[in-house]
Image (tube, rainbow, N blue to C red):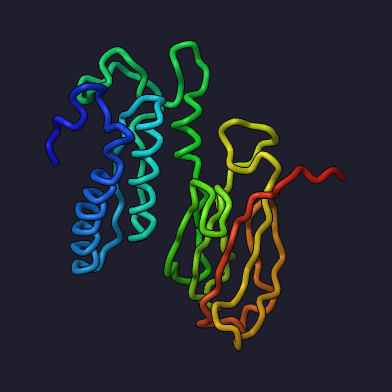
Length: 224
């Protein structure tokens, strides 16, 4: 891809979304294939360095979507502005905060995706929805895990929740659902521990079953 795509604003623009997404599919896909051949996990140790714009949020979402599709871990650069001379930020903030200390909301929300933190088995797929559509609400996480009953620790999901916060997908909280991908398979019996740790109460009969774990945003705040 021609680096001129970032020349005017220092980051890709919304009009280039499809072009950038296809590039990520190609580049991340190739590195994912390499990792599989070598039998090693893959982490993208740095990407981003963008400002608080629609283009930035879109680029983060595209990279994270492709990474999730390949089960590639990633980390954003950078947390706070440190006069980085290696990027196109110049005198702007590529971190999480503006210079007055306020949040860069678009960027943080794009980064603040739900995901599987630890799995009681093998993660087979993971999809996060950053917008409404196709029967899903923005913030909806779907992850398929093949259960291994020899693992003692339960599956832990990550979902940042703060009532009314502009940097969470779950302003009203969320529900966790677990179903068997095989309609004829045993039905998971679960216990939620803490905010998003899922204990399988019938673990032994779920061994080698592929379960769908979901985080679904609540439509409204439930008052107790």
